[in-house]
Image 1 (tube, rainbow, N blue to C red):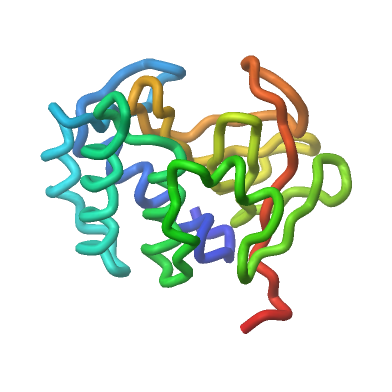
Image 2 (image 1 turned 30 degrees about the horizontal axis):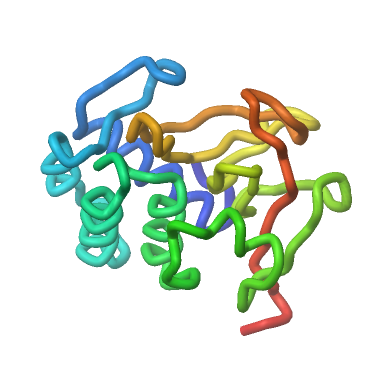
Length: 178
């Protein structure tokens, strides 16, 4: 893909690797794969580079500790940040609630205040993901996990509310902080 952003590129690579190794599903759209306690051995076959052992261990941990035994969106984003060596705070079950306020090394932008770009971490009232590309103005494609189903893949959203999700804004790595 090659967006030029390490997090966006890693998110795209890992989502595609999971899709290639894990059981396929067409939910929520075609091109998603399922990661749950019963299918998670599929992620052990992935070899996608940076810190992969830590990333796979984190995906297993999040899946095993999830309330429903399925990979959660917050755990997936945590694994992605770990994969590029920019680990987010270790509380993946409350990322959506906590991240809009204060995350070390990241700056928060409320919906409508800045233009989202690859590598940003959009937040909704009950969801979190990583932007991998901008296909057109007002739209962004994310790599995501859907905790209710344990599915992993890429989908395009609008910079607004949809699918019953309330779009809050996004986090961006603060380049002024090294």
